[in-house]
Image 1: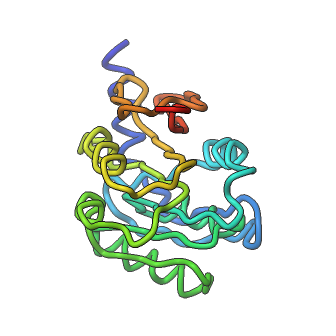
Image 2: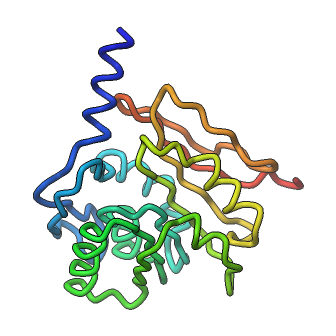
Length: 202
């Protein structure tokens, strides 16, 4: 059984849409955007994104967001489509970054900024102003969840009511930062995804 789960997870980790992602709702509803063919590129699926943004429906309007490990930019683009005021995308892979920049140029959002750099390098810099939502969906093989959560929460990157979305393999536990708790959590196939919030009074 474990071998089967490993195989399914590996396929999930390596899957590449190879064609397009689809914006689910908002200003660009139904818009399909091309995806770069990059090994390990794993766009967040439609059903998972729909659930996530249902969780965020009262928080996304005018939100300032970080799409760390952006890849296809599916999460950040969905956020902009649904009314986020700003999304900073970070992506290190040149091919993925180039395609994401092309998609941003096509859509011409007012608040989309793409940085070709590692997410952890961005988080070493002091933020000018805090953000409201951070999306963390790194390449599964790199196991960067805990380091990213630590860097994100130890500096003033997030506002008082800021939220963190994390996507990770079902069998990989993440360490919640001190003072944070799960607001929502769900599993889809071999992937678990959750929304974190600060513990009141912590």
